[in-house]
Length: 426
Ligand SMILES: NC(=O)C1=CN([C@@H]2O[C@H](COP(=O)(O)OP(=O)(O)OC[C@H]3O[C@@H](n4cnc5c(N)ncnc54)[C@H](OP(=O)(O)O)[C@@H]3O)[C@@H](O)[C@H]2O)C=CC1
Ligand SMILES: O=C(O)CCC(=O)C(=O)O
Image (cartoon, rainbow, N blue to C red; front, side, top):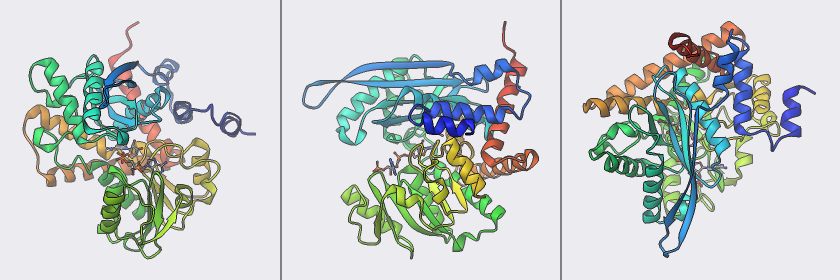
């Protein structure tokens, strides 16, 4: 049995997201003459912060929550990466997501390192007051690490512009003046960038347009399936429909809906706003998240969580393009099967890099206190995403590898250059 198969089957539960990311890193690093020391550095996280902190709940009881902030690498600039509020947040996942951020920022050539953070919690079960209390306490705890030149958090699963505003306010209270550059993804009214909210989905859409050109797919005739309808999934759905494609299925955590004739997105969003789930939605058939991935379609967009496309279901995927809106949705074995089937996978560190790219624009604007128009933001985003796609595609051709390996090769080479130029003090 191949080493990777053995690891993924025998230790399926033991092979963590970080292990998988490191495995992918090594398989790409083998194509570069990477000094063993740099390999060691990049397969470890530079700093890992874990904190257990109390929050007074609405009923007067005290709950203790666990929060994390991990810096994977800062050789190319300050640490950058989102904050996740979800019941499954763990140190291992945060490490992997931080490592993906280092690579992602390098792929799109923005001057940041990689970080990620989060709190193990169920944000949907907290009142607004509890969510604010948790966020402010967590922000105070991580204020040891964050700052506009040190580490700049942003939204990820379960967090949004409001959470970013509370973090900015808490950090600013500690400093004694307003520091908008400490966070991105904040509301436009307090120094956020226009276009950041939909930037990740827009970036995914731009890479799909490029991939469709390569594959000769006409988007007006394309059938699209999207897993997840949060910030990323809902934006991709909107932009694909605007482009003339047909979104045949979409989901939330408890399941999705399918309609071969195409879903009416406005109705779906309205239904979810009222019912909090897609269960019972009258405009389509119910599908599980598992069934959704295996539906007949041209473009599949996993835009929810990790480990969705695995050795178990990769062979049943019928799409021609898989666009990874989510971070880490495909396991190494799942990836191998998709590649063997000839499916074009746009890897997470390229596909969903539009979010951090506009976060970078926001940081620049916050620091300058001078704001750009939506046309300027979207044009610059398109320029970066298109150029990055083309660069990764060319590297894939040059090395005879898939797009994920190519993106890793490009990213590792850029981080390696930073080390070569800065040196490592003995
Ligand atoms: N926000 C950003 O700027 C960026 C996000 N990403 C990545 O994109 C992905 C989605 O993030 P984002 O849209 O911000 O998160 P949100 O919290 O806005 O939305 C997450 C969506 O995924 C759904 N979901 C959760 N679990 C599952 C599941 N097991 N199967 C199907 N759907 C599920 C949620 O459903 P429900 O509402 O029922 O919980 C919700 O619709 C993540 O992997 C994130 O790391 C990547 C780059 C930037
Ligand atoms: O916008 C950012 O800084 C980071 C977004 C993020 O967490 C991600 O790209 O995974």
